[in-house]
Length: 220
Image 1 (cartoon, rainbow, N blue to C red):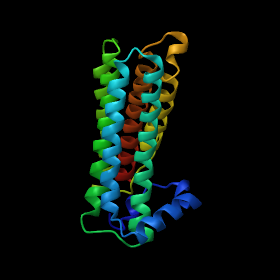
Image 2: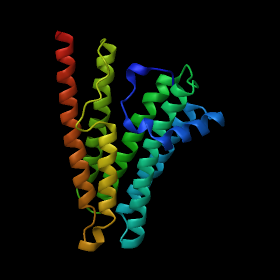
Image 3: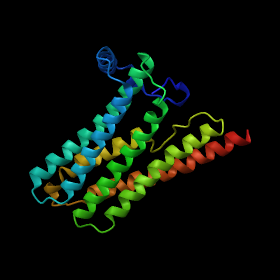
């Protein structure tokens, strides 16, 4: 990741003491930010696989454990996204291929987690789960596409919501944790499906909002 400050998502957690300490430790260990970005994809692969597996299980306890682990993978993915930027910018370890590693792993991770959740819903016996997962994934990628389209047209990066990356992953995490409790009311997959619908709807609103912002910026 290079020091592409114009395309840096504004995050308050970036100033948190724990994040600063972790970034410093990684920089002192000479861990490249691109490796941290790649690790975020590894967590997304694991999280997506856990979501797919959890949906097919009938064992309530084991299923709950998998959902909790998936939620942890989602948050670990976000932590990697935070740390790669801190190591690259604050510690000056960015490389020439940084812009690629800054964007491409994020898009891959979104698809793996959201599509994986969709397959998990489908394997729980709910029709339309796969479609819901892929629709959410495509719309998530579109939110980033509109932002990068704006930058290509000379406009500032637009990180507006309501369902930017952080909000998407927070929503998916919350619905994973609620899904872990589904056996209490004999549910099986409906909670995660609701989460995908919320993410898809919010992402669609985000795409429309960012497109409108871009159009206004170009007119100005």
